[in-house]
Length: 228
Ligand SMILES: [Zn+2]
Image (tube, rainbow, N blue to C red; front, top):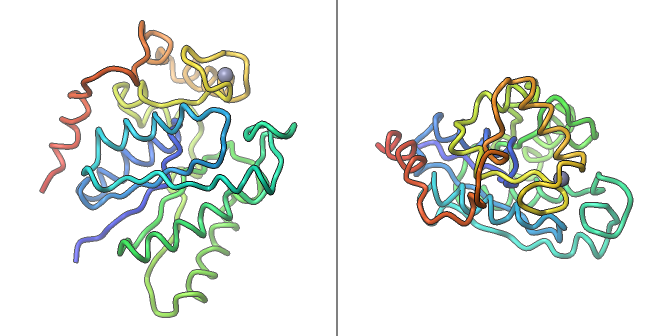
């Protein structure tokens, strides 16, 4: 049986790099991605995730899952009802749903998009280690593993991994707008990453919203190149 990978695809740069890496590790037809609608104010990232997945993966290999309960039970700036950029418990809920999804879809590996700059406890390598122990406890004898392959990378290194044609389909801005606001933390982090990489942000040079284009043929070539 071919190895199958499940990617948690938010629609941002980090998860785009993760998706791209997964499609180079195995055939894109063996990559699945899920995207969570958790009431985020910047729901444009859901469209970004959808467009990226449709461009790189087989048609049935992406799903958007509804976790609208999250803003009913926690408070965060991202869900429009708090002051903090952290969404308490969100990643724990995400990974629990991902594990159940991976079991049903016979995936052997789950990739999470944590990078070096992610400082919250539920982005840490120790968190992932604990999750793996819990998975083994929950499903004895199964080989499902959770990993964070980008964990040591800076934003600049993440940016250098992603083809510009894919980066232009991402969304980072917490204000949820295009063109990006340039003022929020997500925009600032992105701006710094591109400045350090010494290349222009494809989102800022685009003249119209890239997510509303009808053709993504440049990316489809990436996908075709990895078909078995
Ligand atoms: Zn912004």
